[in-house]
Image (cartoon, rainbow, N blue to C red; front, side, top):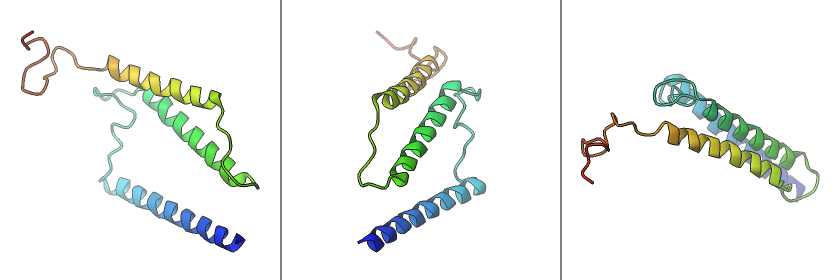
Length: 119
């Protein structure tokens, strides 16, 4: 039974590594663009996007570490504090998206701005 678990673990690791290598190759070839990953629509750096990205990776890697470092079976407990921090980070991202929303100069679908639409 342990050899089956070990084989499944190595298979999962191989699949994850292959996907990571494929993504890196696509980034190098320019088919995946990272220009707007941390920037807003004006091209300026966005602190909320950076915070959301960092928190997501830190919490994700911490969870994976706890899953693979445990000797027992099952998933570790996710505390309310971790979920709260992730929620705060996500909501700050959503608020920044709302602040960066449409201006009167932006055109809505149909070619008219929100100010030009009949009420």
